[in-house]
Image 1 (cartoon, one colour):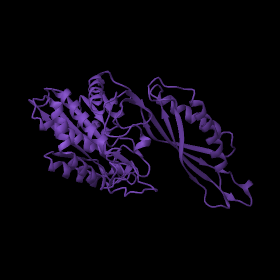
Image 2 (tube, helix red, strand yellow):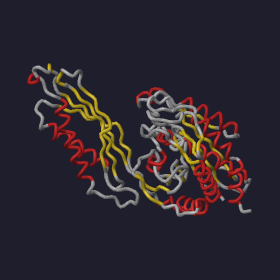
Image 3 (cartoon, rainbow, N blue to C red):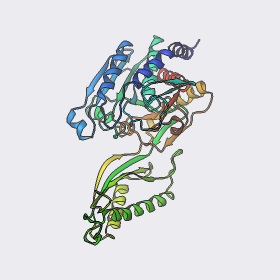
Length: 411
């Protein structure tokens, strides 16, 4: 047997234990909002301790967490050093996030049950990305079972701020000098290795008018009519974006979505204020500063066409696109080689229209890729929808790919 065969055999022998580990993680809710994520970190650290892994807990100060609109965050780092210790080989970080959007309606399985049916495990965050808490942990355990001569180290980064942008997750660890790996792999899906992704700008737009009785509407200024004019201008921009194409495979063009709108006081009152929130996805080729300036101009120009209307625009999030760094080649080549061997098909390197907190590692100069346990598409995983699920065979095989890749990088 080769070392690769031994890794595969260990993962097969311990796969039921890996699934139970994932079930325990799913059973602790991490709905964000409200974002009370520290209890999940405590439970994760407890489970890791049973494997002999010491998880160092980094609690983000409460004031910072509350300012971001959440309740609690404790990020975890597990360090495993091999050979003569630090400095003798690369440090490879494996990052997955535990926070996730609330389950919403329409589930046919308990969103926190970790139920297994027809070869799938169901539950919120099974695919994105508690599944990779499991794949990354068991890949490292498999690697250490070889007792091979390794050089370097592995760090598990289990963080809790992806849904709100990552600044209090990986961003917080990096800003405080708590980690500086040479390479990193972040939670992803099994059938492609992602080297680039979109950026994201989120804005809150408040349209001010003047309330009035609906019987004498001329005495007020209708904020909703002003908001409609602004929205029509933004949607016209969205149509124009289709002509702006990306050269990155897997990424098409920019787009804009208005995901929330609220306003008014009652049916018989001219609305004096309307608030809406928009999400603008930016392809890697775009400059975020120019994108934000352009959207603000569109909003201001549309508002100016409605007498009496004023507008406040607040930036909620600016997540830059992830662009490939030259040093990610060893990661890409190893994952593609072992993905081909384990899955029996080519694993393409490509971009994704999503945005993730992985960009924060790239901005810190750390080459990284996105790869982990999951189906071919977000749609198949039901991520952010009812009945999120993960194919257990994808979990098993992705764990093998990660373990083999770590062996290559640290041998």
